[in-house]
Structure formats: C-alpha cells, structure tokens
Image (tube, rainbow, N blue to C red; front, side, top):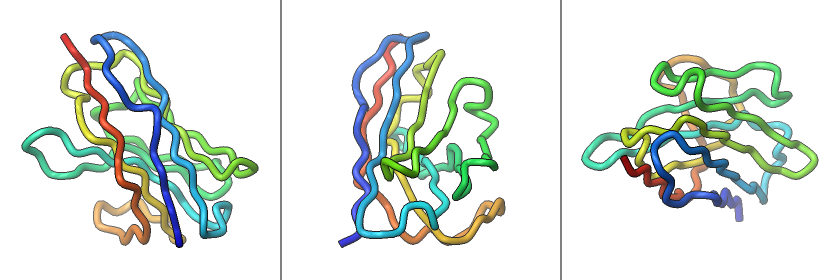
Length: 123
C-alpha cells in the first residue's frame, strides 16, 4: 500500500514557474531519500534531483541546476520540486521516487515510484 502521488503539473509559458508536490504514504517517509525524475517526449527517463532523509544533502542534474530546487517536509510526508525559469525542453512527465539508501551514482535502486504528473512549457 505504498503510494507516491504527484500533483501540481500543468501548462505554463516559458519563463514561468511551477511547484510540484509528491505526497507519500505507506512507508516511513523520514527514513527515505526522495528524488524527482522526468521523461521528455521520445526520450528515456532521466534523473532531475534528489534530497537526503534530513534534507541536508541534495543532488541536481546539470540541465536544471540553478532553476529547480528540491525540498521536503517530513512532518507532512511530502517532497516538493520548485521549478523556475521554465523552458520548452522541460516539458515532460515528472515522477517522484523513494529509496532507503543515499547514493549519488547514476545507477542506484529506487524502490518506489509515483504515477507522474505532466508539465508542459509553451514557447
């Protein structure tokens, strides 16, 4: 009964901003590292950013560095993705993921995934 439910996606013009949320249930949220991934049209799923259990450590993909910020609220069992200065190439389905282990390698196991939320950026 583990559930990760993304919300906050939608249509936005280039240069605009959007904040995604991922509500987590069925696991001990504070014991899990959280991440955001995205899948652009015709492309493979890619890593966007992640945050450690306490929120003290983050990793950010070069493609979104300086524009996207991940944060978490352990009291609300929710992780956020604040997106600013959005570009058309940011158009994608954005997925939330969870895992126990903190890992910075490109291939690390993510145990749980959400269903995704669509973000569309118009030029």
